[in-house]
Length: 187
Image 1 (cartoon, rainbow, N blue to C red):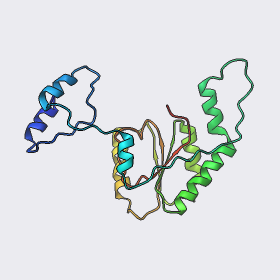
Image 2 (tube, rainbow, N blue to C red; image 1 turned 60 degrees about the vertical axis):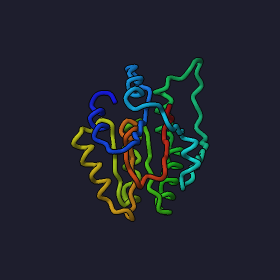
Image 3 (spheres, one colour; image 1 turned 120 degrees about the horizontal axis):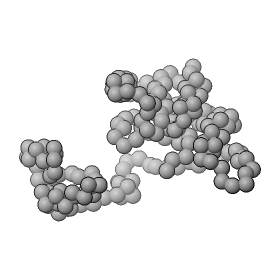
Image 4 (tube, helix red, strand yellow; image 1 turned 60 degrees about the horizontal axis):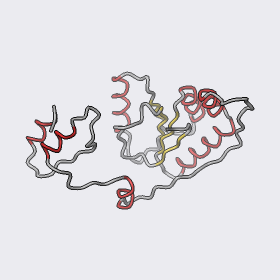
């Protein structure tokens, strides 16, 4: 192993080491193979989906949002503003969130616009019992406090997480999360 992980691996009394990402940006992945030996097993998202006890369902929702006539391409920020301010579209998302909460789901709504996040927070007050808002501009102490709050909520309590994509990304851990709403396009 390379760097700080080498000491951890040396402490293990196990013949198995799990590497999540073998290819390193710094080009030092051959060191991993020298230290750990060859790759014994590979999997991907499709293989994992087949072996999981739950079903992944994607539901597409179509709206009547019309783009403005333009002689060229519309700037992406203008498109995002149109999406986040479309009342009909936002109401459709709102109703879907309420339905998910009614049937006991633990949804997360993702958007990349703070104004969109605040819109849903305001609109959902009084409808959802616990609303947790996660924003990318939160400091480390705030994030830790919110993570602690998320983990302290009883498993049977109704709760909704509203977040920006910067906050809920790789490394976000929530065992109850079972429904994702993408309120804005993602790459």
